[in-house]
Amino acid sequence: MTTTLITGGTVVTATGRSKADVLIDGETIVAVLEPGSRLLGTDLPASVDRVIDATGKYVIPGGIDAHTHMELPFGGTAASDTFETGTRAAAWGGTTTIIDFAVQTYGQRVFDGLATWHQKAAGNCAIDYAFHQIIGDVNADSLQAMDGLLAEGVSSFKLFMAYPGVFYSDDAQILRAMQKSADTGLITMMHAENGPAIDVLVEQLLAQGKTDPYYHGVARAWQMEEEATHRAIMIANLTGAPLYVVHVSARQAVEQLAAARDNGQNVFGETCPQYLYLSLEENLGAPGFEGAKWVCSTPLRSRAEGHQDHMWQSLRTNDIQMVSTDHCPFCMKGQKDLGLGNFSKIPNGIGSVEHRMDLLYQGVVNGRITLERWVEITSTTPARMFGLYGKKGVIQPGADGDIVIYDPNGHTSIGYEKTHHMNMDHSAWEGYEIDGHVDTVLSRGKVVIDHNEYLGAKGDGQFVKRGLSQYLI
Ligand code: URP
Ligand code: ZN
Ligand code: ZN
Image (cartoon, rainbow, N blue to C red; front, side):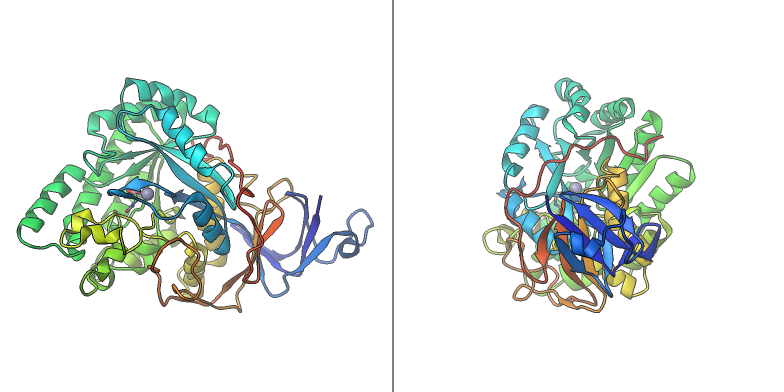
C-alpha cells in the first residue's frame, strides 16, 4: 500500500485552518500532524512512498456534489454525461464524491430503478458515488419498497411537485411519502415548483407567440417556487418528515425555509452555482436561442429583483446550508435545439459538476463567504446531511484519503476551449475567471489529478453506502 505525506499546506476544515501535514496510508488518512513532526520516532518524509509539497496551498476535504444526473433520460433525450465522463470532469474540479439520483419512473418498481442506476455506474466512475432515489410513482408498492432503501445505502428520496406526467407527485402522494420519511428517517428531497399551474402559464405564453428561452423563466415564476416550498414545509410540519428543498433559486423560497427553521422545523435548503451567478436577464434572455444553454428548473432569476445577492447572503447566514450543482448537461446541437420555437421543449439542465469548487472559491475571494464556510457548504455539510460524514467531508484519521490541494495563487479560466471535460458542446460558464486553481486531487489515497494531468481511471470510484443524516432529530 502506498503511503503519502502532504506537507507544508494549510489544512482547512469547516471549523478552522492550521498548518499541518496529512499522512495517508493506502486509501485512508491515518494522521494529521504538526508540520515536520516525527511519528513514533520515524523521519516521515524519508519513510513514506510519496511526498506532496503543498506549501502555500490549501489542503481541503474533497468536494461532495450531492445533486447530479448522469445519463438521466429527460426531456425526450438523456443527460449527455455518462458516469464515466461526468465523474472524470468532477475529479478535474476537485469533487471526489457525487450523489446521483436513481430513478423510479411511473409504473416501475423502485428497486428495478435502483438496479438500473447501479448498472449504469458500476465500473465506470472515476470517483466515489452514492445514490438518492427518485420516487416517480408514489403508490402502495413504492411506499413499501422505501422501507428497504436504507439497507441499500440510500437514505434520501426525491419527490417532484413539478413536471406533471413525468415525475410529478400530487399532495396526497406527498403526504404519504412524507409519512414514510418521518417513520424511516429517510430525508425527503423536494423539487418545489407548482407544476400544474406552471403548465397553464406555459400554454398561455406559447399561445401568445412567446416561444424564446426567456419565457421559461417567466412561466416558472418565483411565486410558483415560493408557494410549493411553503406547501412542502407545511406537509413536512404535519408529518414530521425531515425536508431538504433542492435547487432553491428564489429569495422568497429562502424566506419560507428560514421562517420554518426559525419555527424549529427540521428543513434545509440547497442552492446551485447558477443561482448565485447567472440571471434571467443576462442568460435566459441572451439573443436568439442562446438562452437555451441556461434553461433549467427551478429557473434563473431576475438580477434586478436581487435573488442572487440574497442567495449569497443566505449561504453566509446558514439560511441555505449547502451548494450542489444539479448537474444535468445537454448539448445545444441535437438536444437543447429540440426546443427551437417552443421553450417548453428545451431539455432542462445545466452542466456544472466540474466547476462548483472553483465557482464557490471565487465567493471567498469576492468576500461573500469565508474559507471555512467554502469547505462547509461544498463538502462537510453534504457529508453530514446525507450520511457520509467521518469517511467523507473531513480531514481526520479514519477518513478516506479524499483530498484537494487548492492553490490560492493559481488561476483558472473556464471555457469550452480551455478547461472543459464535461461531455457537452458548450460551457454554461464560458469566460468565468477564478482566482484559484485545483492543483492536486486524491481520491481514496490515489492521485487522480496532478497539475493539469488526469492520472485516474474508470472504475477507480466505488459505490458508497450512506447512513442516516446527522441532522435528524
Ligand atoms: O433543470 C433541471 N433541474 N434538470 C434536472 C432535473 C431536476 O429537476 O433536478
Ligand atoms: Zn429538480
Ligand atoms: Zn436535479
